[in-house]
Image (cartoon, rainbow, N blue to C red; front, side, top):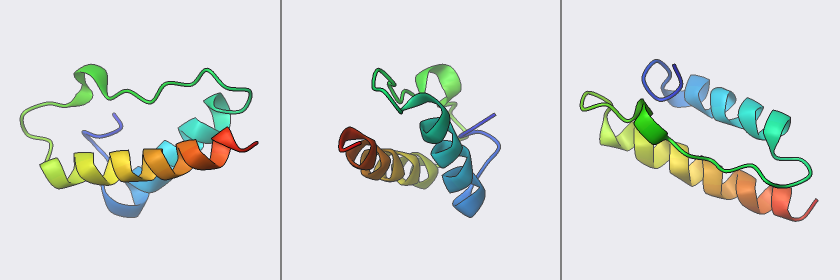
Length: 62
């Protein structure tokens, strides 16, 4: 799921939803773990981490 099956705006929505669920209150660690398979395009991974960094900054101020 996640990086493997989502791209573009669908990936953004997937990541944003996880932050909305897990980030409030602190303690959420965004980690791709074993989801980075050889056939996941690098651009998709870059997009995911750019968005995660933006969301982390937003949730850090709450």
